[in-house]
Image (cartoon, rainbow, N blue to C red; front, top):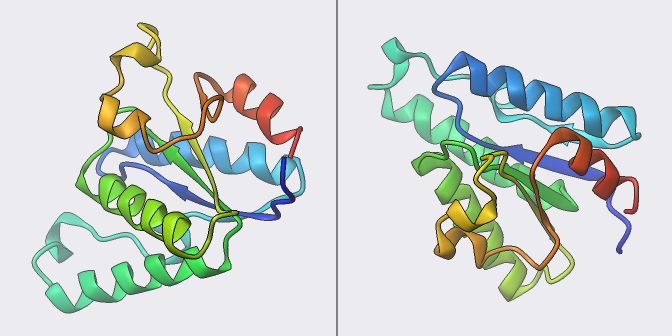
Length: 145
């Protein structure tokens, strides 16, 4: 596998449980010496009362999309993904196909029914072996990078 030093951690942010899980993912990467970009920590979190502020939303979105330029890889939390995660996945896939062929995309999907329950259009975005089912599997994968 290729050398990766910084990961963007993408996933649904609406529920506190998702944000806390992404923080656990962040801890796994950091324990292996990686830098991370965690959107709700690094670009700002948009609260329900701020969701009608288009300038703030655009500012946060611009910061997050700019962070892709500094990252060697992107981890996508695919449990309960929402439109923001799909936007990030499409953006990352576009970068990878156009000029960042070395951009590593990893999916974390912990549905106990297996990855066969993942939307095939989403699964298609990842190279074989780059969708893991747990934090332990994630640790095993990133230890090989």
